[in-house]
Length: 422
Image: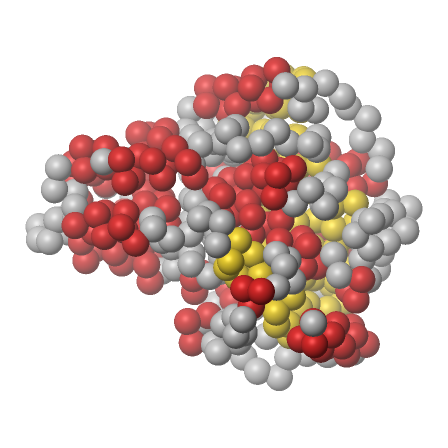
């Protein structure tokens, strides 16, 4: 109790000096003592704030529609439903648009697709690091949300374990990050603030799992809607389709992130890697020290199963298949209680459009309010740009309280902002 009183006092001090800048350069989480949970954090409730600070660097210059930026370390729950912790970054808008929001503001939880089993690739560090040059449409999305007067929550949803592709961990972490930022000290009222989720590709993975788990894990939260782009709903399909194409770089991180919280499965995975030859363990494990962009450079178009002693058969062991089934298959952990906007390219290269069709059909059959747009143009990476404006417009209605769609609508569209194949 005393620690939580101190935390509340710290929030008041930070908010009172909202224009304060951090006086130290950002450090990678593996080198920054701040990225540790305090002793006995396990006794706190999920979503409790454990540490907080003004975000290092100068995020308010990068995102100049914000007035303040905070890092918040909070209590969450991993996929084994054991206490865990993670970090989120909260950006405060310079101006709240009262016409578009509730009296207490609107909150967008924006899940960045960082797709890496390396904790040093987490958004809370990368966004503040000197190497962050920004990327489109990520920068545009965040800036546009701030200009709309929305608070923006950007969680390290893979948690401190860097559990990329572990849906339960990612979903729980997103939900607890929202609990943490819905603290009245930041100017938000949990009872009146409209909250929405948005993520593309790996960000849609975390967002969908949060939507799916909300009813059982965080019934205290009310979420107004979730925009899910380039949805990756079936982990088995990722393994089956991404190898030997440009997207091969996702697979090493997918497998290492999936096993991050499961030592026996991780040991088995490592035991199946070849120790020599062109496709060897050292190269496979290099993904642990880089970003997803590095992984694409290293592994593009490679036959990823060639890294394993028995090829794809090495991944047929129940230690791996059970994890994929339990933590990588959407549609089996709960029914979203909020409207969904789902958008995906029909020619998506990571998972077939039929996977998303099947998930949407499943949700429509149980009455989830769903608008699903299938873009008949281009592929996965292009759709991040092609579908961006539609997603933002949808979120604007949801967070503005004007969204009126009901039922299930599935339609093909043709959006051609870019037709880049990658």
